[in-house]
Every structure is written in C-alpha cells, then in structure tokens.
Amino acid sequence: MKRVFGSFDQTAVYHARNLLESAGIETLVKNAILSSAMGELPPAECQAELWVFDDSDQARAEEILSQRVT
Image 1 (cartoon, rainbow, N blue to C red):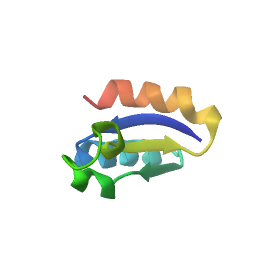
Image 2 (image 1 turned 60 degrees about the horizontal axis):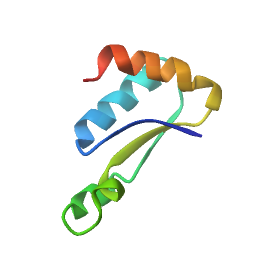
Image 3 (image 1 turned 135 degrees about the vertical axis):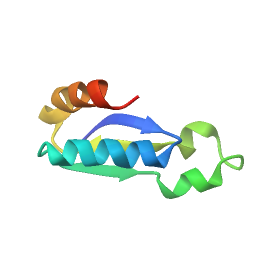
Image 4 (image 1 turned 45 degrees about the vertical axis):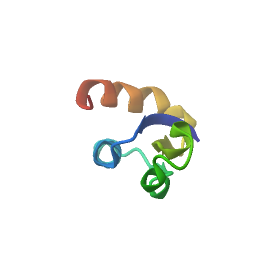
C-alpha cells in the first residue's frame, strides 16, 4: 500500500477517494476519525490519509489527483 494524499480537510480526502475509485483504483482512508482530535494530538497524526492498495497504481493515482484536487 502507498500513501497518495493527505489533508486535514476530510472532504478533500473523500473527494480524492471518489476520483480514484471512479478510475478503478482501490483505496483506503486512514486516520479519518483522528482529525477530530486536532489540538490534542500532534498535527501529523491528525491528518486523514488516502492510500492505494496496489503499489502499481501509485503513479496513476498521483497523476489523477494532481489534475483534480487542490
């Protein structure tokens, strides 16, 4: 599994997930629940992350996201 996107904004993470899954790339969102702990945990641990299951999808996922997610 490879991390392809992270943000404190869960809406952006789930939007990115939807973009990748519509392109046939299987994904996993990690740390979504931890973002509610902002201020109590170190910032890096509170960021929601988007991962692709298949390492070979990483480059294609990053290309899709670079064109669509700001």
